[in-house]
Length: 187
Image (cartoon, rainbow, N blue to C red; front, side):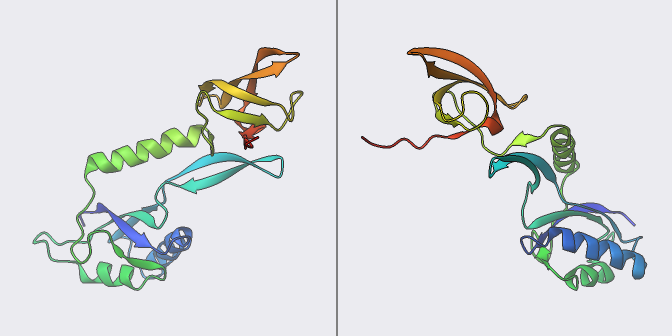
């Protein structure tokens, strides 16, 4: 069977449940010749909650999964067992493209897979800062000080922040998780 990649629309938050259900049913119903890999593109993201740095996994496309399957015969007729199998999977809303979905191109699949592989290596900060932005330092020797972001290094997850110390601005290198956006009050 000629398998191609398609995008399945799922209930948001049910992506993992859908993948597990498909994988279990493929084995149980011996559908391996029709249905291949199911992928949920994700990335690792760091955030600070209650003063503790945590790493979470965030989905690139919430509510969607990629699936490699044989959906069409040579004459472009839908393979009924595959169609029915997926339509009967709990949590699946349908295919992107409706009743006649178009498969993803090889380039689209490669781009997504490469993006996932790239993001697997590094933990990305959940919040991204910009130069000129005011931040409050939440950890370290300058805790409770406000400062202005001078430089951002997203690859290392570090910031250079100008902090007023003894009436002079001093550059301080901090990690993303050591700061939060400052709430400036009107005087």
